[in-house]
Structure formats: structure tokens, C-alpha cells
Length: 533
Image (tube, rainbow, N blue to C red):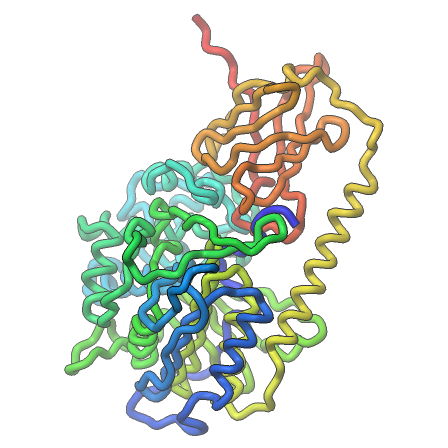
């Protein structure tokens, strides 16, 4: 299967969030049940990594205010001798979102903002495509995936790597059309978490990066963590990301997502994340009687804001179907065996992460991996949760693997059906050079199509990875095979005017497994008119 199918910076909302319909447990009360991690945990992790073709992982478990398990497994890079340990850094991707929500909670505690402040009261130049939404959208709305935007809308402004700045991406937000009514439905997005992060400099004059480092990392004791891929240089203890590219598992470059850092750019380790979970489970309490944030904000962040859809889960994963699923402020909430579970997943090219917390049990788990299988972190985390809740053991490794195989077969069938149905005798309507030209999409910007050596090539102006050859599929539809093979192939369809001129270009992913951050379907490129002399 061509391209990376990884869900980027995304909450695996229906598999990765679990909670009990109770307020967060007070640390002063001892939780019942086991106090030690599963006796087979090390063997379980090793099996999960082997089964899911993941080179390395770091896992930590926090119980009753203590770190009861923290260690690394496997290799930092395939073919290299360095092993993963509890201080090895991984991209935590969308688990960054909880840090952005917490940064804003600190400002709420200080009375400098409120959750229900309008965004334009702090960022006067901010605009959505709908004037009503522009006027009414609040800081709370930025963190809860209910703006009316479509799933992953605008993510191509930073996936794959682009040269757009944070301010430019926030400005381009105004050109993204809404897919639903304001606050009517859940649709995961990253762009608005960037907007939320930009509230920090607007209110404090300090960058999001500096604020998170000074106001969260330092007091929590996260001594190894950082907010930028530029810190991952030779000599630093970090795990290289790995992805299956054209059928081969291999090391890949790190995503450079500093331009959308508040949505997913933090790099952290098992030891540091264990400290973070300890503070979260203790409702913001720090050592020495100090607090990172108030109990009031702890409850606010872990209160449901947006109702999540609950689809049927087939076969072996049916037991994970919750009775309720909600999104709070930067974290997901659901029930599991009568407990409230707070959780989030994260994915970048070559990294996946999973955080799960059961507040009533004062239990927290973090799994960080340098592979693209979301199944490995989930299978490990659910195994730990089942142990501490004393529920019957399920072979989650086999269950998630079976589900993955099913989804891959279904996706392959879709691609094969489309290929079988195409008209192989059809030809393009125009000579190839007639498709060439400069095109523009309102929110992304420009792209160019060129006729080179008897074939077409498409290049996006802001994203070096979106440079691909166009192979004829049928009629006026081509398939883009991108130079960056972690990017999924896309159909590119030219629509013509009556006189044969190009009216527009639309794209959509070839595979249904393509990550939603590759929102090709949201693009509408139209020809750029030549400048008048």
C-alpha cells in the first residue's frame, strides 16, 4: 500500500478515550485493587512490538501517586545499537493538546482569560469563514472539535512539512468552509488548537513554546521534554521515527511541525510523561504543597464538552464499545467497566503515543513508540487497565491485529474495485501540455502542473513533499504519486469548461486508509489568470 496510512496528531476517539462518571479521584484516598503492574507486562510489550512491527517503545505506569513501572524496549533506530530507555524522547503528537489546554487553564486561574471569552476579544484579526461563527467562537470552542469545520480541515497547510508560519496558517483559517453548523457536531481538527496556542502570546507576550517550557515543564520536572523537532539532533537521546514505505519498514525523517506546535509538537519521554500524569491525577498538585493549576480547572478540563459518535466496533473489539464518549478540553472521556477513563492518542509520521488515566483508581499509563502502529500502544495500555480494574484478561494484541487486517483488506478491496472499474481505453481530453499551468486554492495557496518529459507533474508551493508525478487513470483523472512516499497517493481530476479550458482541479485520497490530515478532498484549485501587462 503506497504512502503512510498513519493517523496524524489525531485522537483515536473511539478506541483511545475511557472514563468513569465520577469526579477525579482525590489523591488523599487510596484506590482499591492491585498496586503493582501486571507480572507479564514486559513480555506483553515485547510481543506487541514484534506483532505490530514497531522498533521501540517506552512505557510508564503511575499508581496511587507513585511511578510503579518505567522503562524502554527495543531500538531507537532499526539497524543501530542504541536501545530505548525511560529518558528516550518520542514525538507525542496530539498528546500535546492537553498541554495547550493546561497552559490556557493557568491563565484562567490567573483571571487573565475565561474559557468562554470570545476569540476575537484576544485575537481581533481572527476570522472563520462564517461571520456568525467568527463573532461567537470562544476559547472553549477552540479545544473541543465542534466549530463546524470538517474532519482534519486545513491540515495540508502543515502535513507534510510546509513553509507556512503560525500566523499565516491562522490567517488562512478564514478561507476554510464549514462542513456543519456551529457546535452541532464533532469533527477532529488541528488548526484550531494552533489558534488556541496563539492565545498565549496574545495574552502574555510570551511564545507558546516558552510558556509551556517555563510554566509546565519546569514545575512538573519534565527535564528532558521540548517543543520542537529542531532539538532532536545527533547526540540527543531520541527515537527515530519509522514507517512502512512501499511495503518496507524503514527509518523516516521527523515531521517538522513547529508551525502548528500547540496541536502536536512536544517531544517527551516515559519518565517525564509519568511526572505529567502524576500531576494530572493529583488535580494539579505539585510537590511542596504548590499547585500547577486549581482543582476547579482540573474538573473543567475533564468535563465533557462535545458528544462523540459511538460506532459499532466489530468482532474482537466490541468489548471496548463505551456507553458514553465525550471530548473535554484537550482529552477524551469515556466509560469502561464502570470507571471513567480520560485518554488521548497521538500520531505523527513514524510515531504513535497513548495516554490513559483512570482517575478513580489514580492510575495512569503512557506508551510512546517509534512506529506507525496505533495497535501496539492501545494493546499495551488496555492490558494494564484491565489488570488494575481486575477484569477478565483479553488478548488485545491479537484483537487489534485482527481488526487492522480487516481494515486493510477492506481498503485494498476499495482500491482494487476502482482500478477494475476504470475505463482503460479512455484517454485525456487534452494534450498534456494543456493541463499545465499555475493554480490556486483559497486556503492552501498555489500549486503548479507542468508537462515534463512526456508526463505531468504536480508541485504544491508550500510543501516540498507534495511533488508528484501524475499517471493517467481514466478520462481527465490522474493519480499523483508523491516524491515523499510517506504521503498517500491521490486522485487528481481536471474539470473542463465547454471550450476545453481547465475550470478546476479536485483531489481525493486513493485509499480509504489515508490519514484524514491529508485532506486533499477539501482543495479546489482554479487556474491563476495571467497578470495584465
